[in-house]
Length: 554
View 1 (cartoon, rainbow, N blue to C red):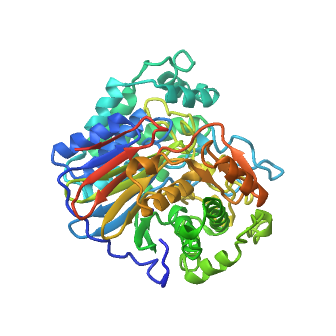
View 2 (view 1 turned 90 degrees about the horizontal axis):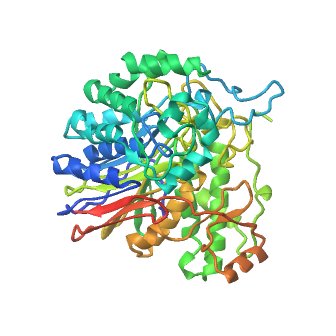
View 3 (view 1 turned 30 degrees about the horizontal axis):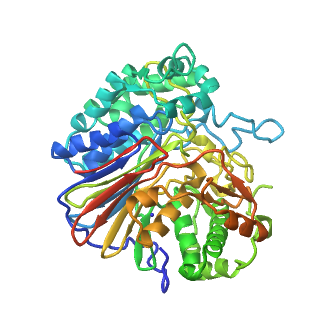
């Protein structure tokens, strides 16, 4: 989604992307077979990668209600081959205008458990509908009537319950039961549906039809908007018609850097992904990572992660509201300073790093990658945050609302649902976008290109990091998406890891150096990648074996 070894003055400039060979084929990797198939359906109708991205996004909103939806938002990283334009479509949710800094605190100033996670008060104003309309109208070739048709069909015909759906529904069962409209759609007699049960969403189909007919106004104005606001407020939310009418996507310049001869293009704030990725890579390039044994390599990567996530906690937020010191964070001087603080033999306790300043004392996301036969490409990461978002559906809309308000710092220094802490830069404010870890990324040199990303909450950034390092090492698509993973996010001060991430010898070595290891009970993430040989145009694609997706080249 690198490191700049000589000069970092170009970080804030949109560096001209390297030429992409036109392929005879196209490739799509997404988290669900129906979404991948929908993307190819649109390409076969004469659409481009951007049209396909609209179709894939919309179908994922139907068939992955635990991961994304038109009641949520995301970031779409686009590259248009005819003129080399790269742009990030920021469709991140925004705080309602009636929100305020302390809205999730009790009378004593303590965070009220669950209030920013369950129910309509946890929902930001959705950005995905506006983003899909914008992409279709500005970058696509086909009408919304065509690109939304597969999603409308999927909503009407339904999709079958899988084991993963059951796990997610069971995890959020009590919250889903609290919303009669959500329970009617996603449960069966208020219980987790059996395998093979078909989930149909007629109200969502009608909402998508309104978007297909009226564009942006089909969601943010008119009958759909009135229902969203009226029903949300009845249930204790604070949405208004003004919130919906004033929502706008933002086109932002992606962040660009270099690592070992590869150009990295990734998400800009309000995503923390690009900055954190580049900070980690800036540190690693000066550590001769490829000269180290496996234990030393992993120790250094963990320490670089720790320092980047510390900076994330203090400095990052919505750039429309706070000054994010991007130049400083991505400067050579800052990388040198962080690198010098790494002890080559010992873990640095997070408590020994500079405290996070305060002015006041995944899996549950989705990603897809696309390259079309003309060389256009899209990396998109979308979310409603926690599984099934807020678990609230305003009756008559079919729209499952996000709970992205939990991505704000409800109270500086207090962890959110993913254990991430934040400072004043990410405090709640009306109309503000909450900080995100979503990291859709392009990695390329003159020979090879990767379009990569993954869901995974706070672990997104480190998963994409592992993918980048493997790609730079020459690994193929299947190997990259299925690598075992490990993660450090500053606080809590522990290395979270999958069962196969470390050998017994590496575990012992890391613990001896002072690292606290926590093996996770399950795997995490659902990475999707498309790789192109830029000399021949040949494509390959892979979807994570941890998920239920589909990667296809044709």
